[in-house]
Amino acid sequence: MSAKTAPETAEKTFTLTNDQSGQSWKLPVLQGTMGPDVIDIRSLYEEADIFTLDPAFTSTASCKSRITYIDGDNGILLHRGYHIRSLAEKGNFLEVAYLLLYGDLPNKTQYEEFRKNITYHTMVHEQLYFFYRGFRRDAHPMAIMCGVVGALAAFYHDSLDISDAKQREISAHRLIAKIPTLAAMAFKYSIGQPFVYPRNDLSFSENFLHMCFSVPAEPYKVNSILADAMDKIMILHADHEQNASTSTVRLAGSSQANPFACIAAGIASLWGPAHGGANQAVLEMLKEIGHKDRVPEFIQGVKDKKYRLMGFGHRVYKNFDPRATIMKETCDKVLAELGINDPLLELAMELEKIALSDPYFVERKLYPNVDFYSGIILKAMGFPVSMFTVLFAVARTVGWVSQWKEMMEEPANRIGRPRQLYTGAVTRDFVPMDKR
Ligand code: CMC
Image (cartoon, rainbow, N blue to C red; front, top):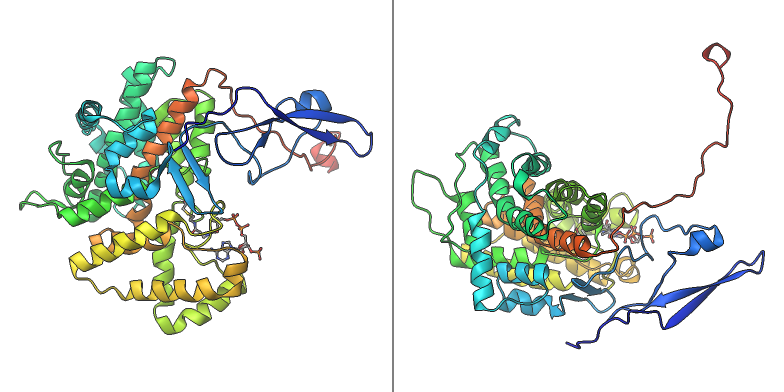
């Protein structure tokens, strides 16, 4: 990968002209190491008394970042310059976590130290166990996660000073280490089984499976193929540039909120079906369709805009989502290992085949995304649909924390404060109630 660095000063400019007054403004154009140039409009309001409107951020870069790069037209995803496929095939989740957090793959000593730091923090304060008992057993585990992750700030007072780099790092490690424990506890609580303590002799993904599926009554041996698949799922979901939940974490962090609060905000944002909640929605959709024969009728309903084809489409990818291809390969391995012949997989493949050849989807460049196959794997592993988005949150915590860390290290970090195009009433005089 090229070691090109982004120039510090703008080498190009972009001229904006007001057609009415004829006045024009020369704006700096910034260049990254890859990807489109960016017009720097920071001085525009001050100089031209004008705002820009981009509610869904389709044309707006909200920050500078060195972590993740996506080329949506060519289906490329890089973390710190490494292709997602090489990371998923050759690395493990903790290596990728280190890479996202610190910028380079760890050498053996760095890896061992990082692994020790993460495993040191896998247990949660015993008092947190009582929080779970306050929830209904049928609570959605994402609702539990929003609450308990935010509550971590009430327990770990010694790492809340965000101006201290060491404390920020301890909080980052705590979040990466504790969220799997909290997620497994949410699962155990929902099925009425006792919480299982983490085991630090296991890998990140083995330990997660152990906390989810072992019971005190008998020994549990982690299946290595399932652990490997879980590790891949974690890597594939680890980070994805400035998506909705990551941008939520950054915006929350820009107000100097503590990291536990910021990550709880990210979890809330991830929950929606247009984002991380899509993996749950895909499985519900497949169940609803029920049989291959009903696919054409369902596709017609999508074209009539009665509903969306969940697990399809992406704001950035206008070509295959590279994560979806790896996810499908992982799905095949897991189903073969477990000897499962899931009719939902057959249905998903039929849906994919029809959608990929239908002009409606082709013209709109709608391809399967990472969530299209992940639900089938997770279901085969024994997770209920309500846990799917929680697993996404466990993995994405690494990305959120890395992006938050990067933002906090930026000297020019200011509170994020978008403006608006006001379309409400103009000034009105107060009318007393008896005169309204
Ligand atoms: N099914 C049917 N039509 C779709 C879909 C879909 N899944 N996605 C987009 N379209 C159509 C949409 O109706 C519109 O058509 P038209 O031009 O006729 O109005 C066009 O494609 C553009 O849609 P959009 O809503 O402007 O696209 P967006 O970039 O705002 O939305 C998205 C991106 C991911 C929210 C959307 O594709 C979607 O809702 N997909 C289903 C949910 C999903 O799978 N989400 C997971 C995304 S990947 C993991 C993650 O990021 O969390």
